[in-house]
Image (cartoon, rainbow, N blue to C red):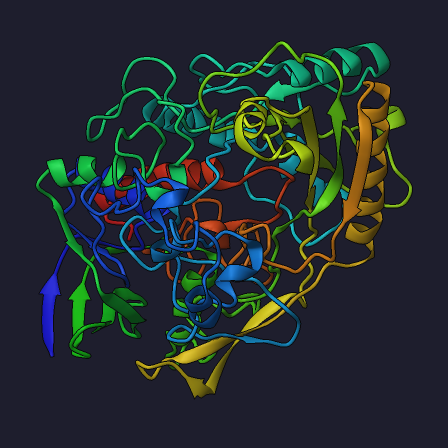
Length: 563
């Protein structure tokens, strides 16, 4: 077996792994970055970035092959001809379900940083304090003041477009100029101001450059193409491929190794610390070992936890750092698929320019004190959605020929608007994942089994999410209001988290306040696995801030020879 030495090893190349690589390399550490999937180079490997729907024989829909090879990836509607190559093949990458679980993922350099929704909202003290105040799960070992400077640091680097709102439940950040709302969104915003004293509408806060440039590979302002999931040739939205990985590479300190499936983290019983990583080469099936002083697991919540669960030793018979028994438990997500939409008879003389890759956002307004407190559920939710003008499909059969047909397709339809709920899921201990050694994958590694679902708290919250969406659209004068509450499956929010939670006490948590394993301090976990509660907002910016903060801590500890 071939063995190589590095200062640091980073597992994963998504939003967390990219940031870990950048920070460690820029601080002088010779860093090996491992990715289990194929290489994806910025621009070069975005094959569909300029395609139109008509460029595909089936018109960019779910083809038979997609349904056959990617049946689980396809459950959320994310997989189309233009994006299928950035999602795994389910047949080659199986998992098991006690209860239905949507595990969407992409095995390639950049991971889901290429396909994420790019919405970025900070957690505030209302989120970091909630578990303690309500006696739910365990207390976060950090507060907003601990992570706020790192939010600043990350946001300034990647570029965040947004509007400052001065809301305690949604802390403001370092924003570039906001994108403009459409006319119907402005109507809703005006109505909320007139009819409520606890609700506001703002343009979404997104990781898109709207002015100037940002570091990376030619990162310039957003072109309003709205083809983000294909990979952006302008680097206008943040991805590891266009931003953090090029910065890491520029130092000369990064070695990037794709097609490297992590088998386990190696633990030395005598030194009482991790000494390296054992991998399987996905192309040759060879085993390799890499030694390092510090290890960052950033493979996303499920893979990072599974790697630790596979990393067994005499001290850790149930997985590295799992003396608490909490590893793989407390799976959280955000529940969605509930809300309402409507149409407007106004603004027939207006249209929009370009394809804005963003929507509006209505921040949390429940359980924030006073009259906002709810009897039926804890925590809260926000709404994401957007306003747009319909297509030309309203022509009649009688006019569907010749000149009349040509004229009809030039006439847009009505304006419409949507409010889609986005709610917090509590950290239930028995929402879990386990390893199945009887069902192994093509590399002989155990497959994962998920057993997780929402409970009464979330079900009651969804009722309120639906009703309030109807009420707000009605008060704003929208017509043809249609509401929905689709059966939610865990994982559908694509924000799985909590599998190796942070906490004060090693008996009830896996990680400390610095994202270190309590029992193995030279191993850091900084992706969604670390989350102690979920909040009700998109979490990626929190992962990035935690990663930058942890990388700084690791380097300081190495200097002090504490790890």
